[in-house]
Length: 439
Ligand SMILES: Cc1cc2nc3c(=O)[nH]c(=O)nc-3n(C[C@H](O)[C@H](O)[C@H](O)COP(=O)(O)OP(=O)(O)OC[C@H]3O[C@@H](n4cnc5c(N)ncnc54)[C@H](O)[C@@H]3O)c2cc1C
Image (cartoon, rainbow, N blue to C red):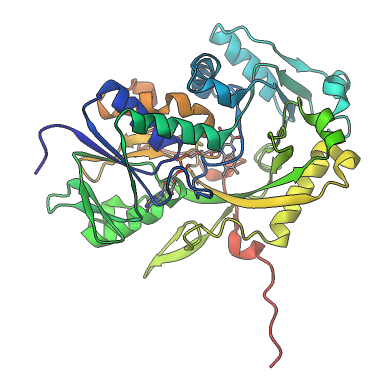
């Protein structure tokens, strides 16, 4: 039976889920809003892509929708006391091999936003920021986009603080592994079933499950005999490696106020690579260029990409080949200057991808009461302060037609070959060779 008062179960306490919970409880202080996640929000280690040391925060997009959304989010990062402590306006230094810089400048202009950003010729750019990027790889670079108003956020700390605030306002948080959705015989979603056999019910169930979304939908399709629940080729789980080095005091002095660095490529050359300024523990971070699937048989006869089955997605088990991906990133940013840095930490981070790089914020077309709000495509974190606003608009049918179409569950999507960041390798081909024991 549908409860008369709306109630909300949000599966996944990453940026999509937490932002939704926060906006819902602020708008409806008496509503029943529950976040369900396999990890406690203040756990020391989480699988969420949103849980990280730091993430790039920028509005430097050639897609005007995300440029505008990025600016809206940044306005909150810069002014609201809840978000402000986590944002660092260090600027961004983006080596562009296409017209990206000009497209971003055009978008700022079209949106009527003035900011300290420009396309800088390479020779001039190399001298900026004390020459930190002088030894970077500039092959085929046309110009450098320098936006002094972009930066980065202390991602995990921010996620924890906003979740705590949502809980203070009345959101409930349940630590549980969700095994499947609860679908009644008319195909309506009435909640979920946890791995411990507990059933939670609500009038609205929202999946913000990131890279795990396709797997959960496959398992729910099987449990309910409703094949239409499956994500099919709408969503692909993709993994990427991050690595960190701890700078010594002397290097830290030099790099402490560095901007975010980006090496921009294109669909033929591969995904963009980034380097983030050091954290308070003096740790400078990179992400690599190899984005991969993990295609497995999820249930007999069904093969999809999904994070490894371990409780922690085996995220700290990083192969030599993937560690080398981070060494490559170091070289293309810092050349000989970073040659002696020791890589201390590596992590594989999983996110949900669509071929267009668009989010999915939409009712699920196969089940009334079920909604999807996820697919960060490796760029979703920065929109944390505004995602929930748009999820509520979707729930209430007031999302603009442009966004409804862009973020729809069912829409035409471009070929993945056009998307430089789309997962192209398979994880099994990137693992360390297993040594055969002597017989
Ligand atoms: C290496 C890396 C670097 C990135 N860098 C940036 C960046 O610099 N800037 C930027 O804007 N974006 C960046 N992103 C993208 C961004 O982190 C993601 O797009 C965003 O965090 C996705 O949020 P989410 O809420 O959809 O998913 P997640 O943050 O992954 O959260 C999903 C949650 O669902 C829970 N869950 C899933 N299934 C279940 C289940 N069955 N039962 C219980 N709980 C479940 C998980 O435990 C998890 O907490 C990066 C991503 C990666 C991987």
